[in-house]
Length: 381
Image (cartoon, rainbow, N blue to C red; front, side, top):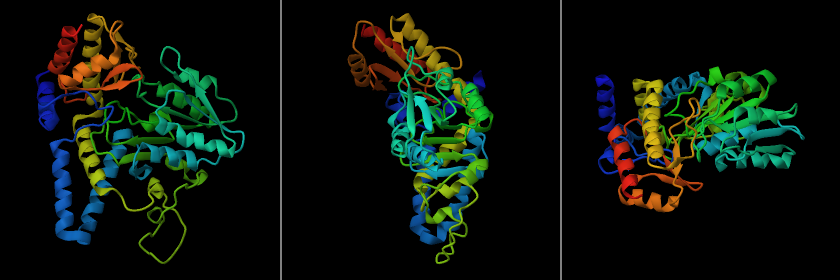
């Protein structure tokens, strides 16, 4: 127990934001760590002093980060591509599948728009979008599989829903899709960096996740995973010069794609974004993703119990396996906006989502901060 306290204290010291705010808003945009800040400064200095002569060193760094990103999700390095954001990953997945008129794609009706509009755009090809309405605030794996049929080509779902924190059973959903040859795409932006995930275990074909939330990086960079065995049956919706073999042979236009997920990288990469992402992933791996998840669930558990004790209604699921780093709550007699305003004025950074206050603590937050937030709510009743 003492060792755990030492680890979380050490991590907390890496986040200057913790000295100013109770920052429970990692489901929106995360603050940078001092580690990431130093790495960004070092990259800028390297480029300033060396320009193109730094290329080999930087590309070696990118390769190491790609390998670590693969470790984080249980993939191989050549199954990882760097993208601008979650949306770009979803666009690649939706555009790569060879659709036929009359096919359908199944998803919850409460997905964040990044995981909706790319699939909606397929309607011009005659692809049906099947939106599954929630029951008691959740769309379960069973509810999704119940509407699949022989023309279902893909299921797309968030591992953790942004507005409720509900975590779907990917074991069940992945097994169903794998057995029936249905592509499974997972939007992991509200999970990766907080909740564990294993793409092989869950039978995931595609995964998209921006880095600016739970992975503690910058906006403008993210990860895209594509299972290697799929390459021959997919199109390339975004052909670019770095996605082909021998890309440095500039005037030999051989249109042969790389035999790796980097075939989806169109051109120059966001090196600063990847650098920040790499530092954060390295730290998550040092601690251990399972340990990080346990810590975050411990904190949301404390918050949930305290909220219920004080007469608040927790709208997020509290069931084992369905909980996540997101905890939403309301009060039966007070509007959520006034609660949110009260917390913000007191230095608690959180969000409003779909009529509820949304809390999303990370591993460096503390039990004492949970207590302070609950005390604030007690005073405001």
